[in-house]
Image (cartoon, rainbow, N blue to C red; front, side, top):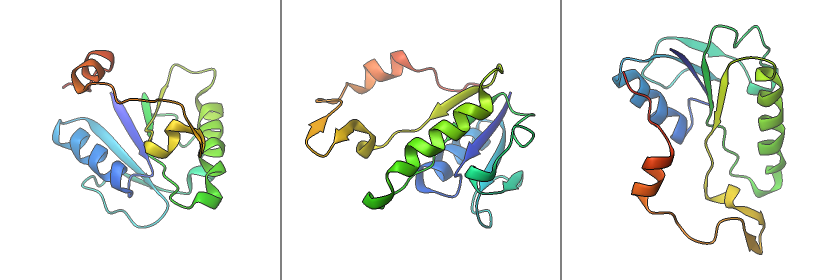
Amino acid sequence: MKLAIVAANGKAGQLITKEAYDRGIDVTAIVRSSNKTVTDQVIQKDLFDLTTDDIAEFDVIIDAFGQPDENKLDEHSKSMKHLGDLVSNSNKRLLIIGRAGSLYADFAQAMVDEAVKAQQIQQRFAVFAK
């Protein structure tokens, strides 16, 4: 399996890249600036400039893009749409890493009201294995 991590230089991206690397998965970091991850396989390109050719060799793409600026939260939906368009009509899997901010439809209404126990989450999601 060939795995690409979009926004691999971010907090979540670095941890996901390291975990995949430590498990022996063929992982490539997609970063906007110089690589800060453990892998030496790198595509240095802004995620909004990625093309289908850039991701052609990957089986799975993980989107770890985060935007801490409240005024730019719309970039999350733009990034998901862009990456979704890139993988549409293909057999590639796109996994999007959500953060606490993604659980709100607006600042008054939570999309998820309570945390799900870790064991239930573990049963729902498969972790990459060697």
